[in-house]
Amino acid sequence: MTRRDFLIRSTATTASLMVPPFVFSQDRPTLRVGLVGCGGRGTGAMLDHFHADPGVVAYAMGDVFPDRLKGARETCQREMKERYQVTDDRAFSGLDAYQKVIASGVDIVILATPPGFRPGHLKAAIEAGKHVFMEKPVAVDVPGIKTVYEASDLATQKKLSIVAGTQRRHDRAYRQAMEKIHAGAMGDVVACYAYWNQGGLWNVARGENMGDAEWQLRNWLYFSWLSGDHIVEQHVHNMDVCNWAMQKRPVKAISLAGRQVRTDPAYGHIYDHFATEFEYDNGVKMLSMCRQIDGTAARVEERLVGTKGTSNANTSIRGENPWRFDGDRPNPYVEEHRNLLAAIRSGNPINEGRQVADSTMTAILGRMAGYTGQEVTWDKAMESTEVLMPAGFSMDAKLEVAPVAVPGRTKLA
Image (cartoon, rainbow, N blue to C red; front, side, top):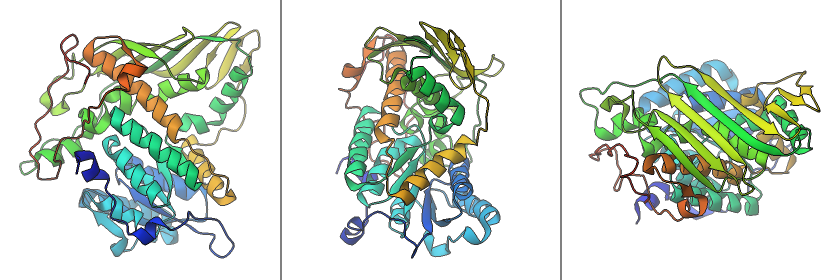
């Protein structure tokens, strides 16, 4: 058994794998939702499901840590009231909690664990015939991306829906802007700019009896095997918008990146800044910047330049065909769930799996260029067989922190 197989092997029975996906009917209009990953984002996603559709009930929940599970259950019970139907025998903790949620009788699975686990969890959910909402990013390495591609294709065959947590794709202002851009309001897009520059994020101090696995999992942002580094975990949103505008993915990247301020071992081994130039096959370039350093200027946005104008991607176009969004703008965090649920109920599935995998791979490409200091092509990157998940991972494993990458010395694996 490979280390990836260890994490993705499903314990679902043959019978459960044969169950067809939920189809809406008057006999059972309720959709049962299971949550895998009970942190703040996972809990928020469950509540977004609740607000998106009155026929949704929380049916099962799981997390590695019992305290996370308990906190999420209390929050959801308080907010969802009678639509919270998670009984004690459908609340699971441990590394196999995802398998138990999937096998609990749910129709939809929300995948919100650290991204390193996402490919295996998605594979298990789709094989079991479940519709999926999965948070971004959807992998941290190339083998994981390939697993997501395969699972997404299987979902298409099974007529299952997959929606990803790239909520800008479900934001009414972004969608209207992109419709106009793709219709030629800006002419041809000739340059893209993507930014996620901000201060630092939270950190969990290591307790006296906290083992390596628990410490790294509770601080998952700071370990590339769990988060992919912040260019993947966070900046993927902005790259996704640029790929959306270009209607394609880049073919190569070169980056200036490092770990200059956030150097304490408490922050694992990831970088604190990246500045990356991506190039598409038509020569158009995307300049990408992301930074997590306290006391620095913040900028989180996307800007596009065309032959007939420019755009702040979510609100306006300037130039020959000026436009500014003016209308109702529902919460996109709820809209992405509403669109998923509408697709399930209508029997017309939507599948964002490959789309979000391409954007996640774009971010991984940028990380590879940053870590190595080399120009890396998409095709070369896709040859990587490096699996970032530690070999023999378990909650009792002794996990050494991987060394910080050094451009010019770190090789592409």
